[in-house]
Length: 188
Image 1: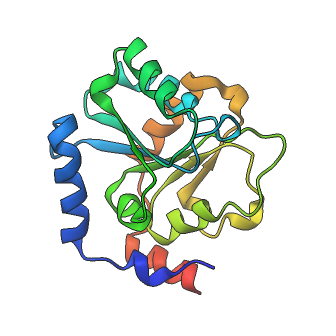
Image 2: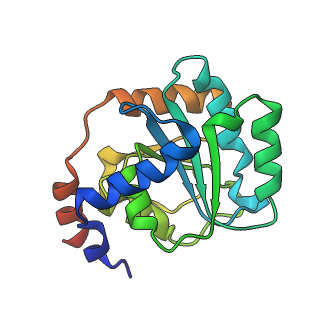
Image 3: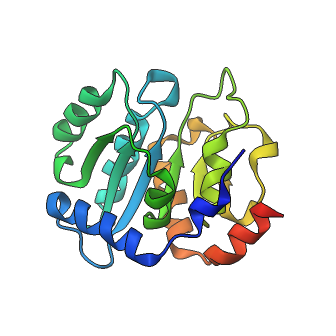
C-alpha cells in the first residue's frame, strides 16, 4: 500500500532537499531534476538515464539526474557520468527513506526498467502519481499501476535515449494535474 499522507508535505521539505543538492550541483532556481528511484541493478537499467541526460544536456543546462537507491552499479553510474562529462549533473544518493520528498522536489520520474521480464505492480509509479510527479517509463510495468494517465508517458526502450530525451522535454513543457488533485485521485 502507498502511505499517501507522506505525499502531502510542506514545501519547506522540498526546498531543503533542493538546497542539499545545490551544494553539489549548483542548481539554479529553474533546474529540473530527473529522478531515478529503485535498486541500482542491471534490470532497473539505471545507465539508460545517463544516456538520456547526455542527449538532454545539449538542449538545456538546467537538467540534472538524481539516483535514489543502492546497488552494485552505483560506481558504474558515477563513472559513466564522468565519461560523458556529466559528473556535475549527476548525483547517486544511495538508499533514502525520504522518497516522497524526493518525488515532490523533482520534475520527472524516469523508470527505464528492462521490459522482459515485466515488473510487479511498480509501486514507485503509483507513489510518483500520488506526488503529482510526471513519469516517463518503459513498458516494464503493468497498466494497473497507471492511475493518472495524463501523468504517465510509456515508451519502449527501443525508442532509444534520443526518443526518451524528446519525451522528457515534452513532459517538461506540458501541463499536468496539480499535486493536490493528483494525490486526491490516487487516494480515491
